[in-house]
Length: 393
Image (cartoon, rainbow, N blue to C red; front, top):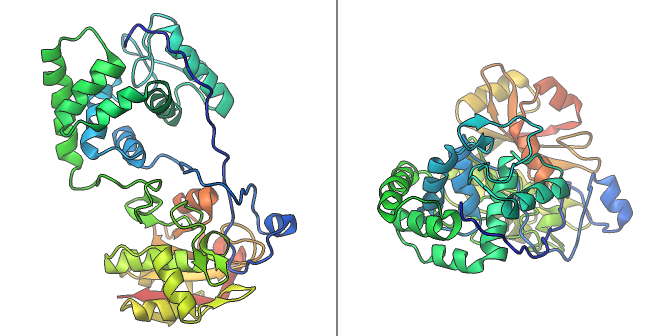
């Protein structure tokens, strides 16, 4: 790491937007938010809110994080090529190969973390950021946030230099020169770190596309879970877009659920804006209520899919899921439903007959989408058994 004291500007923390997405929403006062399980809401917030890290391992999470910030895969691979040399992607790594425990605090002169921050000038920022965000210093998301703060706020010229790199090898060299600044020679950096970056890029170029940031307003899914595209209706890309007389953020759980289904079954990039616009023009939006149950057949038919009402028969649902179909339903009750109603999809059945869902309910929905649900519990939580549809090709 560079021996350098960073004069860090005031940390800019965006307000968390954790907003529930009921099927029936129109009153926008405090009573509305509390009754619909909304913890925080800022109607004027426009900043991009990062959700949980996405990926099967630390390397994939690192790549998706930086691509989510607008970097190309080549540039993200260049960063990762450095982290591989510094820490093998392990945020608990202490210089010399020791793994930190949960109570560890960085020591001046001893490298720590994915980037091996070595001196107090940078380590203290990591510690303070951990305290301010209630995270451990070895939390991967924390360390990635610190790296981005250093790149984008403390030293924007570093970021500008990195953004000019067009190959993994050149990105690795630039990131090392500006950010890491170890004692490695230029030849060693290009050979080892650059070589790491090229291999990483080659391994992921067919599975992770550049420009997949939900902050980029490019219509990409808000996140991926097990390769399945999850749409968060409060994603800044579309939260303020119209759905009838309301917005997708306030009333768009139905269009968001159907967008997940269309995207998955047709292979075409279809966003909540697409389904909300078509749906509202064709009668799916009910003023003062939200989405009608007709949204399933109207959207499915338009996108060439078949929708059939099936009821809450667990065996039948499992058969449909295992044959490649998806389920859309709604409910009023406890999670993943809300007190005023919410659409979700059932996207998979596990080997132990648990259900995996797709939930557009902001960060809460992302967490719900990662869990395995007992079908009996889901039904008991408030599923509307008269609004359970199988959607197939």
